Image (cartoon, rainbow, N blue to C red; front, side, top):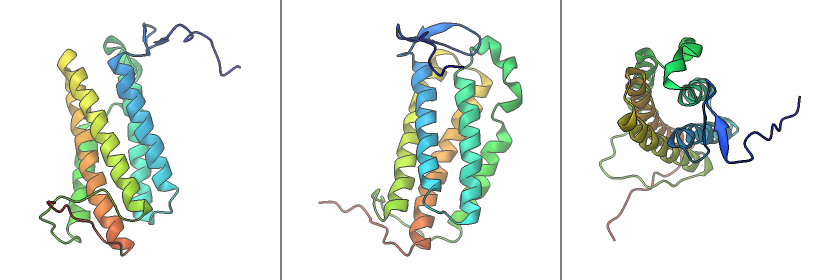
Length: 184
């Protein structure tokens, strides 16, 4: 089977369900951003993270793939993927991890610059891409609200919070300075 189909040569692609849409469609921007974030998390995993963090990042990558599938599916065809839709339990999992990580971190009362060593900086890159994904989802939710959109939006919002505290945790693990914003 060839990897190239030539069906997208005119600037369109198919959603799950068969409808052809422009490759500039907001839905494609959203699932493309989820794919980009997934790739960056894969890069972060390549930096030899501790086992517990590695397991959490594996969870995030799988959930992001599920989210991408959801975003690529026509709203009236969600029955095709109902077994992989994000759920409130996924949001609660992230909240639990955030709480666990934060209890071992010092309180910081300033903005943190996205800097440090490569692993810390990569956590921040993931966080900022996650925020872009969230903005795409908000625009989609404005166009066509549904309950699962709300859950997936909560999940992505918590994921960006998780990536923020993960950056602080990785800085702690690596004994790396946390750079605080200074008013200049």
